[in-house]
Length: 337
Figure 1 (cartoon, rainbow, N blue to C red):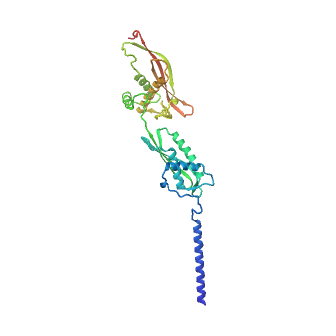
Figure 2 (tube, rainbow, N blue to C red):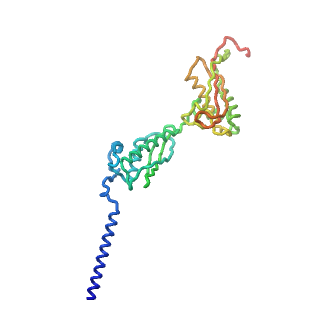
């Protein structure tokens, strides 16, 4: 009987152990995520999409019409892929010429529920992303700018990292000379690397000398003719009114010198830019706003100043005044001949 008691006791302990194992297994099973418990999570493979353009167009319409609380959900990985793909669908341009590239990062947030994202939440996030991407695009001061690729990742807490790869073209643009090579060759003659061109002293005096020096055209084909000017108008070009769409070496992309502090010497390249830009301003204005026949710039005057203008910070700047005149051919010689 003693042996039977031991046998029954061992059997009872074995049954208890099996029961504990069964309960433990059931608990582990109930804690595992299952698509059966969340049937709205979709299995997605982008490599099986045959017509990507049509798919993204339909998907964008789908999320825009999703009803909150009654829509499908996606995993974080799939949500990130769709956000990135929609951004490239709306903003991306790959097949364009460019000479340089830049990489920037902006950030956003996506509502996440237990590791999933609903279509309505995706729609709200994409609307915000689109505005932020467009705002960033508008802020770029680059020519021929295009987004080459937009990559979006989503962390488990919903924080989004949006990497923007942008292509653009660096333009060598001139305003007065025929091309960059002509501008460089003339500046090599007129300017010296050994000189110091302080913005409000030597730079001003040299710009006045050079601008009036390069504008000494022979007006008449008759060498002995008496040709003289009569004034027509003065036009002042203020630094905050003229922006260079191709990029300027100065603050505010101004075509005239503008700087944020009073201690600055212009480089030879900056002086050369000023010569080309200032001369271009004077001549283009005369072309755009003709007044009389035979009008030419007769005198160029560069001045310096400082102050606070409109919504800009305190600036140290140049202004340019061009005096225009009409040339006249007299019947006799000048008294100085």
